[in-house]
Image 1 (cartoon, rainbow, N blue to C red):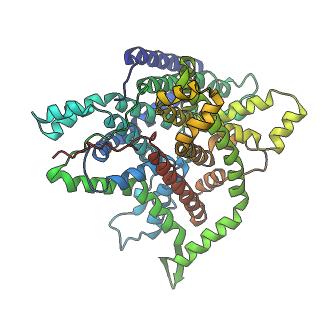
Image 2 (cartoon, rainbow, N blue to C red):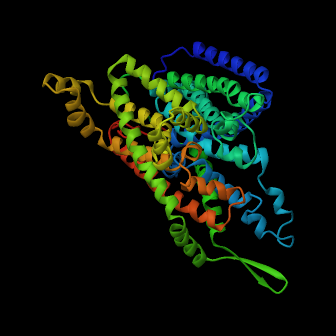
Image 3 (cartoon, rainbow, N blue to C red):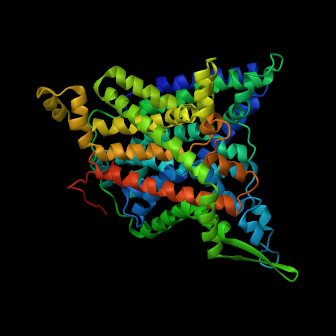
Length: 550
C-alpha cells in the first residue's frame, strides 16, 4: 500500500505559517496585495468546490467499480492532463464566449431566451474553465489513493454493510490523504496559471507577475506599487504555495516497495447504468464539449439571403482552414518544435539522474522532493522572469547574443517547467526495479553507469520513452514562461493562439487549436500505452487473484 509517512500536522502548521506570512506581507507591504490575495483564494475555492466532488466521485467509479465505459473515461482523463489550459479555454470560449457559435446561431424565433445571456465572462468563466481542467488531476490523484486502500479492510466491512457505506466509511477514509493532495494540487495549479485569468480579466498574483514582472526592474524608485506587487507580496504568495506542494509531496511519499496489483472492483447492481451515464457525461464535459465547439466554429459559414443571414456548417471550409493554418503558421509550428525537442530531452535526462539519486541516497530523495515541490509551486511567469534575470545580470556580448539570437532562454525555461514531471516519473519507475537485480549487477562488477545503461534503462525503457513524450507535450504547450523568454521576433503556437483568443475564438484560432489538440491527444495516448505496458508503470501489473465482488 502507498504509505503516507510524514506527520501532516507539522506540515499543515508550516502551511498556516506561510499563509500568515503571505497575508501580512500582501496586506501591509503591498497596497494591491489584499485584492490579489482575495482573488487568488476566491478563484481556487470556487474551482475546488466544483472539481473536488466531481473528481473524487468519478475516481471511485472509474477505479473501484465495474461501471461501463470506465476504460474510455480514464483514457480521456489522462489525455486531458496533458492538454494545455489555453486550449481548454479556447474550446469553451468557442461555444459560450461573446463570439461563440451559440450566440451567433441563436435567434429569437428558435430560442426562448437570449443566448448571449449564457456567455461565459468574468468570474464564472474563469472558475468553470479552471474546474474542468482540474477534474482530470483530481481523478488521477484520488484514483491513485483509492488503488492502494487495503482490500482486507473493505472485504471485512462488506460483511456488515452495504457497498456505499463501505465506500464512505472505509475506502474514502483510507484514501483521505490523496484527497488532501488533490485539493492542494487544485489550489497550486489554479493559482499559478495565467491563461484563463488574463483572458477573463481576473487579477491574481500569477497575473500580476506576468504583467508587471518584466518591467519591474525598470520602474522608478518612487513607483513602489508595481515593484512591491512583484516582490514582497509575490514572494510571500510563493512561500504559501511552496508549502502546499511540500505537504503534497511528503503526504504522497511512497514506500520503498510499491505494489502494482489492482484491487477488486465491485459491481453496482441497479446503480450500474446511472454510473455509466455519469461516466459518459463526464467524458462529454471534460473533452467532448470543448472539442465539438472548436469543430463547429471551424466550419461555421454565414451567407446572406435577402434580408436574413443563413448560418450553416461546411466540411470543405473546415478542411481548407486546417490545411491553410498549417501553411500560414508554419514558422510558429517550427519554433514550437525546435524549442520543445531539446527542452524535453534535457528535462528527461535531468529527471532520470535525479530519480536515480533519489532511489539510492537520502540526500537524493530530499533533493528530488525539493525539485518537485519547487517546480510545481513556481508559476510559469516566475520561471520566465528567473531565466530573464539570469541572462540580464551578465553584461556580456556573448550572453546577449545567446539571448537575442538563439533559443537557449526558452529552452531553459521549458526545461525547468517540465523537470518536476520527469523527476517524479523517473523516480517512480526506478523504485519499482527489484533491489536484488541491482545488487546482483553490483556484485558482477558493474559500475553505476553500466548499471544504468545495461540494467535499469533496458528494464524501464517504456517509462523512459513515456517520460520524454510527457515532457515534450508539456513543453510545446507552455505559454507564460516561453512568452517571456522568447527572443524578439520569435513566435510559438501557444503565444499565437493566446493572442487570437483575446478577440474571440474565430475559425482561424479554432483551426490552430484543433491541430494542437490532435498532436497532444496522440502523444498522451502513446504515453499512457508506454506507461501501462511497462511493469513499472502505475496499474500495469494485473493481479491474477483479482475478482469482482457483487
